[in-house]
Image (cartoon, rainbow over all chains, first blue to last red; front, side, top):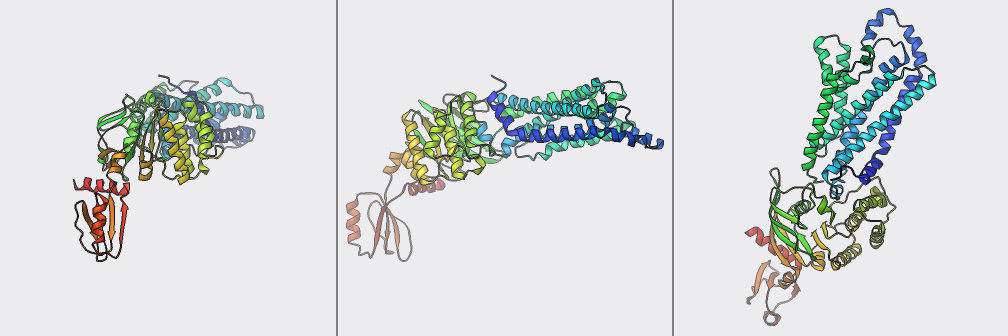
Length: 265
Length: 290
């Protein structure tokens, strides 16, 4: 049994490329803009009174370098919008055929359910990797524009971990579409990264020990760029292991449901 | 050899009945009509054949295999046309049909041939097509790969009479090549024209399986008589009327009927053949009474 079908993959990518390009370019342009204003922001930071330093620390502190600035401003924005994109792409891969009522024609083709599942998952993965690659490239262009020396290892690590977080959301929402009944609104998928991002923000902003534990229920924790810098590249292995495990479990559960899924629209 | 067999096939969607009890066999090379009113279970049965849904109980076999979620091996030899033809709306007809052709391992020659026969514009976007033209896309998609079995859910609904005729000719051509056709329909004229056998389904149960030739044999005369009088003759049965006219069904030789009418002093009389639809409705009524 073949896992992937090239013709189906090409058609799936063809159907979604416009949305992918719009999201990618919109996020990339925003990142370039955030990076481009860095020289102006340095002057603003210099004007901040010392009594505000503690408050700023909750948001990552005042950045000393372009990479720290990118971590507090650019990477966090990228995480929010990128995860929304990933969730929508993952959920839509199965849900769209049912919403647009094309499922009946599609699933009567001589392809196994496994081929459909894996090919659609591959499509989502490629789209997420594409977004991450292009946004990283545009960020790099942004650094070149302002001609700031950049420390590459943390920048590369952010990019890799961001990709991993987006894949977690994409795969989980893909599985969710397989587990839920047909005709669910894509808003259901957006809610997940949005809520988890809010939880992550709360956990990061507060010094409370109980609230701090919230960071373990959101995958943004293991790719938190500020924490990575603060802790000198120490990864949150617990968070990463939990969410990668959850993603694998969700994908398998999604497959079990998809293998029996009935297409009545 | 039977291409499709189903025995006591049942399908429930939770508490809702889809199909109650379907037992039938479709022979290789025949055109088989599946006729019934809305909600009778036609589409449910067809979706089970296409592997899109699974039966609750009973057994079904298509081309010697059991259809189900992993029907890839069966679907290779089936041309399936859903009742509602939805395809990728933002793409051109040519792109969509080429995709279906490649997935079925064939080139675009047959696609162009069928599009020309059905007068389908390949360069239009799917979302710019009328309902009837989307149906044509469904017909072409199902016939692209010259399948062994065509499973068509109400294929002519929405087609204009000219295209309906062309489509029925296409089915006959496919039959000559050895293709088996299973089609559901509301259109009894089409069933009479093209089908070899027909199954009547109501409330998820198959009421009758018969050949069109046998159904035609059941044809009888319908009489509308401009009188409230009762006429008595063996084979003549009154089935309604009012103060001014009476309705009769007659099964028997024509001469005794004409003799009776000639002596009945009637001001007007209409005699016509019962339509296939009236025969079906008679079966449905008897099904209800049972």
